[in-house]
Image (tube, rainbow, N blue to C red; front, side, top):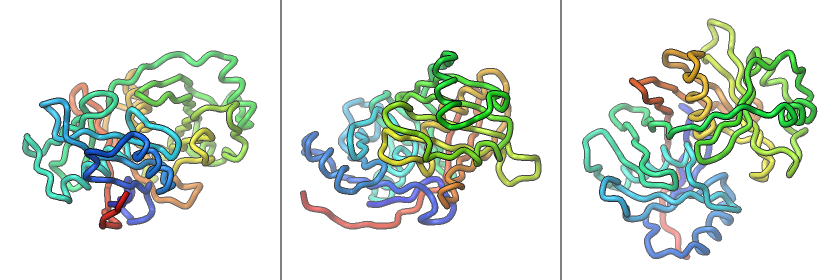
Length: 272
Protein backbone atom coordinates (compact mmCIF):
# COMPACT_ATOMS: atom_id res chain seq x y z
CA UNK A 1 0.00 0.00 0.00
CA UNK A 2 1.01 3.61 -0.35
CA UNK A 3 -0.21 5.99 2.34
CA UNK A 4 -0.22 9.72 2.88
CA UNK A 5 0.38 10.62 6.52
CA UNK A 6 0.00 13.71 8.71
CA UNK A 7 -2.34 15.77 6.56
CA UNK A 8 -6.13 16.14 6.43
CA UNK A 9 -5.72 16.58 2.66
CA UNK A 10 -4.74 13.44 0.70
CA UNK A 11 -1.36 13.84 -1.09
CA UNK A 12 -0.50 16.88 1.03
CA UNK A 13 1.26 14.91 3.78
CA UNK A 14 4.26 12.57 3.75
CA UNK A 15 4.20 9.53 1.45
CA UNK A 16 4.92 6.01 2.74
CA UNK A 17 5.15 2.61 1.06
CA UNK A 18 4.00 -0.34 3.21
CA UNK A 19 4.63 -3.99 2.39
CA UNK A 20 2.01 -5.66 4.59
CA UNK A 21 3.43 -9.18 4.06
CA UNK A 22 7.17 -8.83 4.58
CA UNK A 23 7.91 -12.25 6.09
CA UNK A 24 10.53 -14.16 4.13
CA UNK A 25 12.18 -11.15 2.50
CA UNK A 26 15.90 -10.72 3.02
CA UNK A 27 17.51 -7.55 4.30
CA UNK A 28 18.91 -6.97 0.81
CA UNK A 29 15.47 -7.34 -0.81
CA UNK A 30 13.96 -4.88 1.67
CA UNK A 31 16.69 -2.30 1.12
CA UNK A 32 16.57 -2.70 -2.66
CA UNK A 33 12.80 -2.26 -2.75
CA UNK A 34 13.00 0.80 -0.46
CA UNK A 35 15.54 2.34 -2.83
CA UNK A 36 13.23 1.58 -5.76
CA UNK A 37 10.14 3.22 -4.21
CA UNK A 38 12.30 6.33 -3.74
CA UNK A 39 10.12 7.52 -0.86
CA UNK A 40 11.48 8.88 2.40
CA UNK A 41 10.56 5.56 4.05
CA UNK A 42 9.28 2.12 3.10
CA UNK A 43 8.13 -0.31 5.78
CA UNK A 44 7.84 -4.08 5.97
CA UNK A 45 5.38 -5.76 8.32
CA UNK A 46 6.33 -9.10 9.84
CA UNK A 47 5.07 -11.50 12.48
CA UNK A 48 6.01 -10.15 15.92
CA UNK A 49 8.88 -11.57 17.92
CA UNK A 50 7.54 -10.04 21.14
CA UNK A 51 4.38 -11.70 22.43
CA UNK A 52 2.99 -8.31 23.49
CA UNK A 53 3.18 -6.89 19.97
CA UNK A 54 0.58 -7.10 17.21
CA UNK A 55 3.21 -6.96 14.46
CA UNK A 56 6.88 -6.24 13.88
CA UNK A 57 7.89 -3.30 11.69
CA UNK A 58 11.13 -2.71 9.84
CA UNK A 59 11.67 0.76 8.43
CA UNK A 60 13.99 1.61 5.53
CA UNK A 61 14.95 4.85 3.84
CA UNK A 62 16.31 4.52 0.28
CA UNK A 63 19.79 4.17 1.84
CA UNK A 64 19.53 2.54 5.28
CA UNK A 65 17.40 0.87 7.94
CA UNK A 66 15.98 3.06 10.72
CA UNK A 67 15.19 2.16 14.33
CA UNK A 68 12.07 4.34 14.50
CA UNK A 69 10.16 6.90 12.47
CA UNK A 70 6.85 8.63 13.11
CA UNK A 71 4.91 8.77 9.86
CA UNK A 72 5.89 5.14 9.06
CA UNK A 73 4.47 4.14 12.45
CA UNK A 74 1.06 5.74 11.86
CA UNK A 75 0.90 4.82 8.17
CA UNK A 76 1.87 1.19 8.76
CA UNK A 77 -0.66 0.85 11.55
CA UNK A 78 -3.41 2.20 9.27
CA UNK A 79 -2.35 -0.17 6.48
CA UNK A 80 -2.31 -3.15 8.86
CA UNK A 81 -5.82 -2.40 10.10
CA UNK A 82 -7.01 -1.69 6.54
CA UNK A 83 -5.73 -5.10 5.44
CA UNK A 84 -7.68 -6.89 8.18
CA UNK A 85 -5.34 -6.77 11.16
CA UNK A 86 -7.03 -7.20 14.55
CA UNK A 87 -5.18 -6.00 17.64
CA UNK A 88 -4.87 -8.02 20.82
CA UNK A 89 -6.34 -5.12 22.82
CA UNK A 90 -9.30 -3.00 21.75
CA UNK A 91 -8.40 0.50 20.51
CA UNK A 92 -4.66 -0.15 21.02
CA UNK A 93 -2.12 -1.45 18.53
CA UNK A 94 1.33 -2.43 19.77
CA UNK A 95 4.12 -2.14 17.23
CA UNK A 96 7.47 -3.86 17.67
CA UNK A 97 10.35 -1.96 16.06
CA UNK A 98 13.97 -0.96 16.60
CA UNK A 99 13.26 1.09 19.73
CA UNK A 100 11.06 -1.57 21.32
CA UNK A 101 7.27 -1.59 21.68
CA UNK A 102 5.42 1.53 20.50
CA UNK A 103 1.77 1.87 21.56
CA UNK A 104 -0.64 3.37 19.02
CA UNK A 105 -4.04 4.68 20.12
CA UNK A 106 -6.58 3.84 17.39
CA UNK A 107 -9.71 4.79 19.34
CA UNK A 108 -10.38 7.94 17.30
CA UNK A 109 -10.40 9.01 13.68
CA UNK A 110 -6.81 10.21 14.05
CA UNK A 111 -4.40 7.52 15.20
CA UNK A 112 -1.71 8.61 17.66
CA UNK A 113 1.45 6.88 18.86
CA UNK A 114 3.00 7.22 22.30
CA UNK A 115 6.27 9.03 21.68
CA UNK A 116 9.24 6.89 22.70
CA UNK A 117 11.61 8.27 25.35
CA UNK A 118 13.86 11.10 24.21
CA UNK A 119 17.38 11.70 25.47
CA UNK A 120 17.96 15.45 25.84
CA UNK A 121 21.50 16.83 25.87
CA UNK A 122 22.87 20.37 25.68
CA UNK A 123 24.12 21.50 22.29
CA UNK A 124 27.83 22.43 22.30
CA UNK A 125 28.45 26.06 21.40
CA UNK A 126 30.70 25.06 18.50
CA UNK A 127 27.86 22.95 17.08
CA UNK A 128 25.40 25.83 17.50
CA UNK A 129 27.78 28.25 15.78
CA UNK A 130 28.10 25.88 12.84
CA UNK A 131 24.31 25.69 12.38
CA UNK A 132 23.81 29.44 12.75
CA UNK A 133 26.56 30.17 10.23
CA UNK A 134 25.34 27.54 7.76
CA UNK A 135 21.74 28.78 7.84
CA UNK A 136 22.45 32.49 8.44
CA UNK A 137 20.30 32.54 11.59
CA UNK A 138 20.86 35.49 13.97
CA UNK A 139 21.99 34.23 17.37
CA UNK A 140 19.54 36.52 19.18
CA UNK A 141 16.59 34.72 17.53
CA UNK A 142 17.43 31.43 19.29
CA UNK A 143 15.38 30.86 22.44
CA UNK A 144 16.49 27.29 23.20
CA UNK A 145 18.79 24.66 21.72
CA UNK A 146 19.46 20.95 22.35
CA UNK A 147 20.50 17.63 20.86
CA UNK A 148 17.65 15.12 21.01
CA UNK A 149 17.84 11.35 20.54
CA UNK A 150 14.74 9.13 20.19
CA UNK A 151 16.32 6.67 17.75
CA UNK A 152 17.20 9.35 15.19
CA UNK A 153 19.42 12.16 16.51
CA UNK A 154 18.26 15.76 16.03
CA UNK A 155 20.02 19.11 16.37
CA UNK A 156 17.13 21.38 17.35
CA UNK A 157 16.63 25.11 17.74
CA UNK A 158 13.57 26.93 19.02
CA UNK A 159 13.41 30.32 17.34
CA UNK A 160 11.37 33.29 18.53
CA UNK A 161 8.67 33.08 15.86
CA UNK A 162 7.21 30.81 13.20
CA UNK A 163 8.08 33.49 10.64
CA UNK A 164 11.78 33.13 11.48
CA UNK A 165 11.49 29.36 11.04
CA UNK A 166 9.83 29.79 7.64
CA UNK A 167 12.44 32.33 6.52
CA UNK A 168 15.36 29.86 6.78
CA UNK A 169 16.81 28.86 3.39
CA UNK A 170 17.04 25.05 3.45
CA UNK A 171 19.28 25.00 0.37
CA UNK A 172 22.10 26.31 2.56
CA UNK A 173 22.35 22.97 4.39
CA UNK A 174 25.15 20.90 2.89
CA UNK A 175 26.03 17.25 3.39
CA UNK A 176 28.03 15.98 5.24
CA UNK A 177 28.84 19.13 7.21
CA UNK A 178 25.32 19.41 8.69
CA UNK A 179 23.30 16.58 10.22
CA UNK A 180 19.52 16.55 10.67
CA UNK A 181 18.39 19.94 11.94
CA UNK A 182 15.00 20.62 13.52
CA UNK A 183 13.55 24.14 13.79
CA UNK A 184 10.46 25.16 15.75
CA UNK A 185 8.85 28.53 16.37
CA UNK A 186 5.53 29.70 17.77
CA UNK A 187 2.77 31.15 15.64
CA UNK A 188 0.89 34.25 16.77
CA UNK A 189 -2.24 33.66 18.81
CA UNK A 190 -5.24 33.21 16.54
CA UNK A 191 -3.34 31.14 13.97
CA UNK A 192 -4.87 27.71 13.29
CA UNK A 193 -1.59 26.08 14.43
CA UNK A 194 0.43 26.70 17.57
CA UNK A 195 3.90 26.04 16.11
CA UNK A 196 5.72 25.76 12.80
CA UNK A 197 8.33 23.00 12.43
CA UNK A 198 10.89 22.28 9.72
CA UNK A 199 13.30 19.35 9.40
CA UNK A 200 16.34 19.98 7.24
CA UNK A 201 17.96 16.69 6.33
CA UNK A 202 20.82 16.73 3.86
CA UNK A 203 21.75 13.14 4.72
CA UNK A 204 18.38 11.89 3.46
CA UNK A 205 19.07 13.14 -0.06
CA UNK A 206 16.61 16.03 0.17
CA UNK A 207 16.92 19.48 1.68
CA UNK A 208 13.70 19.29 3.71
CA UNK A 209 11.37 16.55 4.95
CA UNK A 210 7.63 17.16 4.40
CA UNK A 211 6.35 16.06 7.85
CA UNK A 212 8.44 14.29 10.47
CA UNK A 213 6.66 12.38 13.23
CA UNK A 214 9.84 11.31 15.03
CA UNK A 215 11.18 14.89 15.13
CA UNK A 216 7.86 16.21 16.41
CA UNK A 217 7.84 13.45 19.04
CA UNK A 218 11.31 14.47 20.22
CA UNK A 219 10.38 18.17 20.19
CA UNK A 220 7.22 17.48 22.20
CA UNK A 221 9.21 15.66 24.89
CA UNK A 222 11.72 18.52 24.93
CA UNK A 223 9.06 21.23 25.22
CA UNK A 224 7.15 19.39 27.94
CA UNK A 225 10.30 18.61 29.94
CA UNK A 226 10.53 22.19 31.24
CA UNK A 227 6.90 23.26 30.91
CA UNK A 228 7.06 25.15 27.63
CA UNK A 229 3.92 23.27 26.57
CA UNK A 230 1.42 22.02 29.12
CA UNK A 231 -1.59 21.16 26.96
CA UNK A 232 -2.47 19.86 23.50
CA UNK A 233 -1.00 21.75 20.54
CA UNK A 234 -1.16 21.56 16.75
CA UNK A 235 2.02 21.79 14.71
CA UNK A 236 2.32 22.75 11.03
CA UNK A 237 5.11 21.36 8.88
CA UNK A 238 5.87 21.30 5.17
CA UNK A 239 4.58 24.82 4.51
CA UNK A 240 7.69 25.94 2.61
CA UNK A 241 7.54 22.95 0.23
CA UNK A 242 3.81 23.26 -0.46
CA UNK A 243 2.63 20.53 1.89
CA UNK A 244 -0.20 20.83 4.40
CA UNK A 245 1.23 18.89 7.31
CA UNK A 246 -0.63 18.88 10.63
CA UNK A 247 0.65 17.06 13.70
CA UNK A 248 -1.49 16.79 16.85
CA UNK A 249 0.42 16.65 20.13
CA UNK A 250 -1.54 15.37 23.11
CA UNK A 251 -0.47 15.00 26.74
CA UNK A 252 -1.89 12.06 28.67
CA UNK A 253 -0.42 11.68 32.13
CA UNK A 254 3.31 11.17 31.61
CA UNK A 255 2.82 10.18 27.98
CA UNK A 256 3.19 12.37 24.91
CA UNK A 257 1.05 11.25 21.96
CA UNK A 258 1.74 12.22 18.35
CA UNK A 259 -1.25 11.96 16.02
CA UNK A 260 -2.46 12.84 12.55
CA UNK A 261 -4.53 11.75 9.58
CA UNK A 262 -3.58 8.84 7.32
CA UNK A 263 -5.01 8.18 3.86
CA UNK A 264 -4.57 4.94 1.92
CA UNK A 265 -3.79 6.21 -1.59
CA UNK A 266 -2.69 3.07 -3.47
CA UNK A 267 -3.46 -0.59 -2.80
CA UNK A 268 -2.16 -3.52 -4.82
CA UNK A 269 0.45 -6.26 -5.08
CA UNK A 270 4.12 -6.39 -6.00
CA UNK A 271 6.38 -9.23 -7.09
CA UNK A 272 10.02 -9.24 -5.97
